[in-house]
Image (cartoon, rainbow, N blue to C red; front, side, top):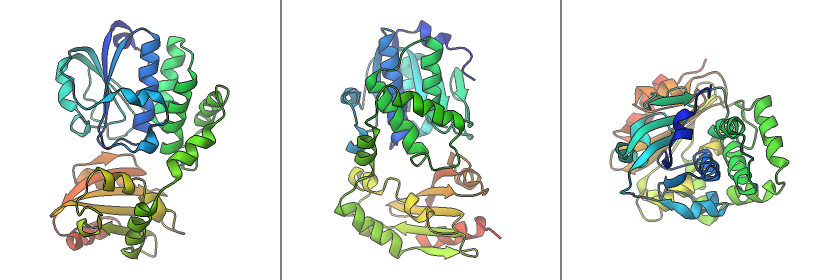
Length: 314
């Protein structure tokens, strides 16, 4: 799949970006790739959304994140993002001579000059490990942590069905470099009282239907501490859908977060064969068959009614 990385090898000044509201796979892949490029004596700039939880800043490379740049680049590399407009800092692609896209979303629009896309891997971090091997570069102690963050978070700590034997082989390689991943697990899984309050509201608003196989919940602006879906609220709500998706017998879970008046962010997860990416696509979003997202406008009750008509499991 990664059969020609000439653009990466030939470029000296490189920009790395990823999607808005970056998760563990995005942050981990960005930093692991950046460390690889620095080993090759490349000049690396990370443009990263400020909407990133401190829990994701597990090593010092995250100290180099910036939100803007005026530099010109030989190459821009976009990671873990299916569509150009979903990228944080997508306008900076215009500052690069070429763009490479590395992703694992089946809905990827292949917006780069070179596109390395595989939905067969559990996380983009798996592809980054492949690139390390292709270039003959050893994974450093710090890079191993970032790669573990990528793999662990996008697989639900290796519990999801996207995990393969190759995922475990690559994780075993990381354990040969360092073994303190329990500390990373603890850092990314712990939460405070504010998140607990949001979780109680999400549980209170739960709707279950379709023979108890579909669960939908929502949270509104009035429920946020600052009465706005700001960075703090976004971070507190991150991965909260995983709580409701783990209810017994649930095959599809939906969490709707109000962003502003009549505008909502929708996260969708599938535990079975139902393709939530197809649902997200109807709203202009995308993702994987089992994990996707989109935006929806209108009244919360109407949005829920519409989703209940689309997501039906016999």
